[in-house]
Image (cartoon, rainbow over all chains, first blue to last red; front, side, top):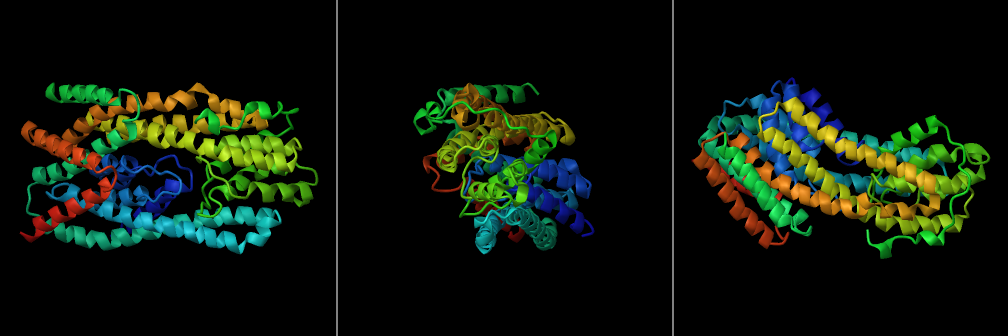
Amino acid sequence: MRELLPVAMLGGVLGLDVVCFPQMMISRPIVAGTVAGAFVGDSATGMLVGATLELIALATLPFGASRYPEWGSAAVVAGALVAALHIDSAGTVTIGVLGGLATAWVGGWTLVKLREWNAFLARRKRSALDHGSRGAVVGLQLAGLTSDFVRAMLLTTLAYGLLFPVARAMSALWTFSEVTSRAVTVSAACAVAAAAAWTIFHSARGARWYFAAGLAVGLLLLTMR
Amino acid sequence: MSAASAPTPRAVPSPGPTPPVSALTWISIFGRLLAMQGSWNYETLIGNGIGFAIEPALRRLPGGVHGDAFKTAMTRESAYFNAHPYLASVAVGALARAELSGVPAERIERFRIALCGPLGSVGDRLVWAGWLPLSSLVALIAFGNGVRPLAVVLLFLVMYNAGHFGLRIWGLYVGWTRGLAVAGALGNPVLRQGPAYIARAAATVAGIAIPLAAARIVAGDRVTLGAVLAGGAIVAAGLVRLHGRVEGWKLVLVLIAVFALVSVAR
């Protein structure tokens, strides 16, 4: 678990990117999973789980006040888990995705708590804000950014610290073959991605035909391999 | 954005002479725009972020940071505000121009209220439901085609952030140059028709990306891949028919958890 500290720091930075700063989408699973995997020494495996989570994450759009899973820290935990377990275990990708989804769920809850915490801080500074205090405005912003970084770092630390021994034990007891495990996981992820594509794009004129045309191209590319 | 929801451009005069603002101030404002949602909360939403971003410009008001003009403007600009975080740059530019040009407070407050809705809905459709999924899907195609991890990550980040930073810079520029007359800029064809074009492109790319990404992750034979895609299509049809009553990612979490339990317990 020597990797815990760098993974926690990475989770803090990428968790911060989800909402607060700088929203460059370095927190997207395909990025965060790959980078976390690289931190633990296996970016290719990290990207496998990151891409799977990316398919699932297509269904959750970060609209304003809506509640959504926090993918940044979650993908870091998932990418680091699979890279640490190594790809030779049959259930690695499935276990990583499971760990990532569980962390994303808890992460979504922590985002709600962070917003309530920010509101509490703003209420405490109400008088200063009403008098145009520059210090109060800047202070609130810095307090919010710091809180979010700490939130994401703690979440990553706890999730990785708790899930790593569980994941290792599961990996040792895993009985399904690697292909079956990945097939079940990816089938579920593809279902969410396809449903998300329909939900997001179906209102655009002709979108179903564009999707069908794309699918034909994708399948053609696969048969040509 | 619907035309009805936008502030009417004719209701405001052309902005007055451009107040002088240094390059350093612009860099400071732009840097702060990246932290727009730093103190996001359920009461003032991004209000404090607007005040935080506009503060370097307000220092140029008569009396500086200790003057009444600065404090009154800070109070006004840090109040409740809602917008897409990227398009909030339009508001910051326009409000900075209005404050430094001495526009009456009531007009600024009316303008602020009018700007909230359009900047939220346009940004959500253009970025969250358009550019972001499109960029993700393009990266998934690269991944599915066996591109190396670093190249996939760079492809996604460069593509997404070309749109991201472009939108923020454009927003700040039109906000500042047009001031309270910025509503007309929100009729820009990219903002009005862009989401529909992006949606069609993303639908096409989704069709290509999903089977390619699945093939790379499964790394099995054609029969297995066929079963994966067929199973995925059936579950996807079920999810669509449920009209969002079940969140897909939660369903996957439950399915995989049950699968994992069976795998370790049998």
